[in-house]
Image 1: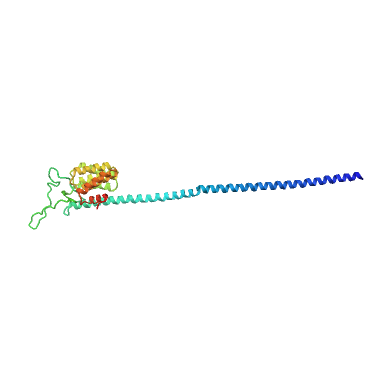
Image 2: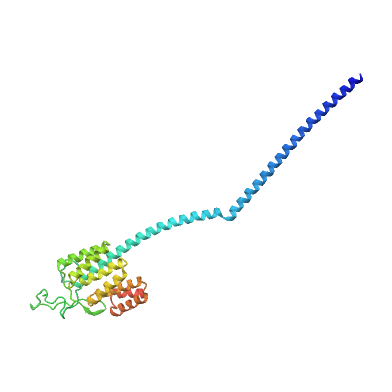
Length: 298
């Protein structure tokens, strides 16, 4: 009886110990789960903190703002390029209109110089300087128009360069063949074919050095060279005009072209002296008015 009691006591003790051990295992597992959750939360907080710090650092560096500025600059550059293209086109058209206007004005002036009684197939310009003491139209009999007494009227005076009456030249119509060659070269200049115009006008001057159109042709050689930015060549060509045709009505224009070329070459002082020479010699000419504007004079 006593032995059975001890046996039962032993069995109860073992059962209590097992239950206590199972209870201990559950609590340990819960503790470990809790610790793991705490670690995960700590890692999440640390990650959030790092992301926040990185975002603040990026904003501090201004990368986003810098990117936006770069994009804005690109848009501005694209817009400016478009405006430059438009302005370039307008400038080209303006230069073409100005060139055509100048050519037309030159033709009108030569027609006026020819006189109202002169019939010409195309614009006529001043003749070359007298050769051997004779005027350019020596030997040419003017048309006779019967007056009240049946006597021919006196010939009309030759035109003079504005502002310098001493530069009077005899204007005669150019032969039709010369006029056609001259007009063909002038058309090349109008089209912007400056190399062709230089060749054609130079050939004209060489072939017809005594033509009434020779001085004007020499002027357009220099003008075409200026258009090609051959400023030294333009100066040399216009100086040839001054030396070979000193009485030409193209002399003021040639001086103005020389001053423009000198200015483009950076010789401002020399260009100023040329403009002052132009004003002094031809004060009433249109070229002198332009020279005064450049010098800031009234």
